Image (cartoon, rainbow, N blue to C red; front, side, top):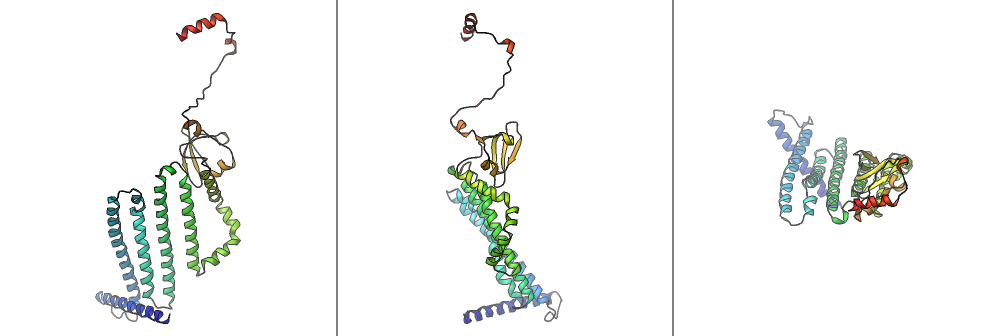
Length: 310
């Protein structure tokens, strides 16, 4: 362990020396001499590292995205077109660049300096955000692939995707706060127990929507394209969208009604999918009859009616 620490410190010293040499050379080229004692060399090295990482990110995205897209287009499978889309590959390059930045940038400053502590925390936050954006893009691509499968057609997978993204966002937020306050995420999660009531109040709709979405999906209660009827909510039309917090229904008069998913689980609604799948058709019409026009049916009247059948 001692040998490894000495090796790491030796590498940091060499990198610091190299960056300082480059910064001094740049300052002398710009005509700003005597940079040894002014502290300018640190910030010039800081700027050089940022520019180098930005250039590395640009080159990585250019090479990786174009190269992978060419490989993906040559394959016979279709799922890889969604999984290795430009958005996923670009955010993967951002993660790699963030890790490189986290390795190189703190070396610019002294080991026990306050500037190094602040920069290190900010870089760690940037790495967490970059990883979260990458996971978010991967989740979106995975659920795009799942929605194209016949078994998942018209299933409420949008709510499941939003649930996964919400969990990832919650973990990302906890990690960012723990980095900024320099506390363990475990201690932070333990301390959140006192705020459970507040969290339940703030995230009431997403939590209820998650539970309702799982029940709707497991019991196959609702699909996109189903004709449902809920007179208590003024709903009589086709389901157009199912998400974590809202279900959109287009009525037959082209009005749009939105209801939370848990209202369908807690209440009752009529789903006419069985009638549609059976090939039947429901017709609702109103007829106005005058009571004074109703007369007894005589044999002569029946004979006259037979003539219309012919």
